Image (cartoon, rainbow, N blue to C red):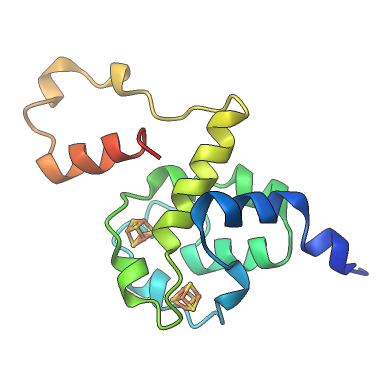
Length: 133
Ligand code: SF4
Ligand code: SF4
């Protein structure tokens, strides 16, 4: 398959970089972000692979992934990245991009009343942060 520069560095990737304030090409695929992520067991695509998809301009694959929605915004990945890439910020940007295009997967109203007192406060804060990007 032939990959053209203009197809890889497309408008979608530029928008994610703009929303996150990050340079996705700074990532050199060391995998430390994924190694430290506590939610990888729930994710369909590992965080460092999301970065790779963005580097390759793979819009559909990046946007179809459940990973940004399972991200708890714990910032482990951003702290561990040796290249200073704010991976959590990129997850935020992907959710924001999807929301601006009418996709919403955070449905807090569906959480049963009996669950509210059981949910860890950190989980709640992380969940609500997803609405503030
Ligand atoms: S911020 Fe998200 S992607 Fe990064 S380590 Fe935490 S849960 Fe994983
Ligand atoms: S830790 Fe940083 S450099 Fe390493 S794979 Fe993740 S984003 Fe890329």
